[in-house]
Length: 170
Ligand SMILES: [Zn+2]
Image: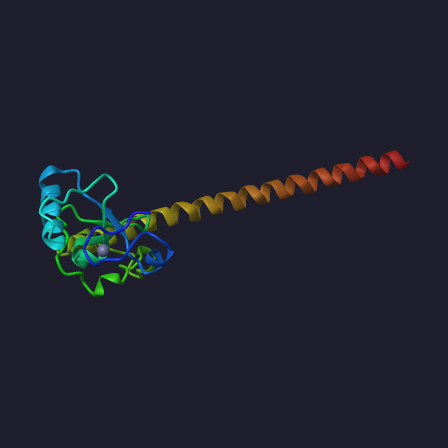
């Protein structure tokens, strides 16, 4: 059960933290970014020789909202440039809007140029989900057709069966 490595932070992965939208993030693999993260944790913990292990995680309370984005499958991810902040943010517990709740489905590429990476990522999700939805609608339509064909076949076979039964009785 990984817990947050930041000092005074009591968050650990359980159902409560999940329901509050708290996510846990591993240390970056990139050397330079990793050093920066470790440096911040050392400052925050006031431990000069602190080292993360493979299961060390930092919870989402120590990242700025603009450093987070929601992936298409609903996971909260960090941007590559994200790094933890010394003071935990109060409002960071609010979960970013889920892609499905966005009403604006028709997003032009022109607009995206002006978007922040977070918004752009969400719009990308919406676009993908809209495509997915269209595919499912088509699939549903085809299955309904197939269903109608099979119903007809059943009706024909039942009719034949009845005829056979009648002949036997005669
Ligand atoms: Zn934490």
